[in-house]
Length: 365
Image (tube, rainbow, N blue to C red):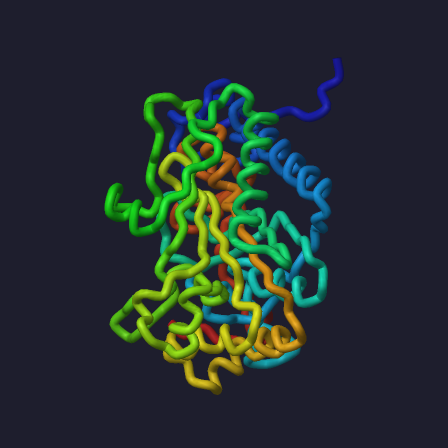
């Protein structure tokens, strides 16, 4: 017998499911935590899901395209993670909250059917089941209406469950379609849990929620409910352009919900520049700021952009639910803690003075 490498005694047992061990210990020694059977099974399931999605979409004419990680800071809902530029003093890149603008630009480029297993970054306040970085299935299609996108994604979800999780039962096919008004009045949430038996871990109750309000009122004015790139429903387009009856404008947004959690959302987009500009004006943005933040989008849409729409799934959340786990950290290889720390690598961490100087940065206590 040859000993290839001896091991120190592990800090916790590896022959259990790990739920009895404190999360901080598991995160610090994640490379050991991943040795347990449950964690390895979760990563293999994630792999199977991603491979299935790639093959399924590729077989229907979709092309996977990688979009940039270093991009521009634009107001899209959450705070951006920013990256200082060494070459351009005082200027910053931003990490993408989603590939939203890039995938629309691919539609302008004539790609027609795009998807990506995309990394996304949002500097949000800490919360138990939230991560600074996460993964989406991102998808966009040209020359489609709302039903086209919903039907394609519904078929993908049904086929995925049947192939990879044959022991699970989808409660209702086709998925129920409920309006935002209906679910808020009946369930007081836009993520209703429609399961007939909430004690059945293998029961999957999907549904679609549609007809969301486009805008909501805040202390400082109007803001979008989902994202500013959505198009209103056709019958509300005149109100958008005239900036009237703003609270009554409904958007083409559609969310797919599973067992009380939103696992995806998308919309048909404003594919004409004056439509999109009207959204920003309702939000109170001045012409100069619109041009500074979104001038590239308005210019691109002016070159004959086709009608288009898409969706993004929260892939981590979907894998979590299909594997009956309690947190997205259970299906990610190297997640952060709930307060956005990496205990294994020791990040975030301070930079050396030399690095700060190269980046033209100064830390003020």
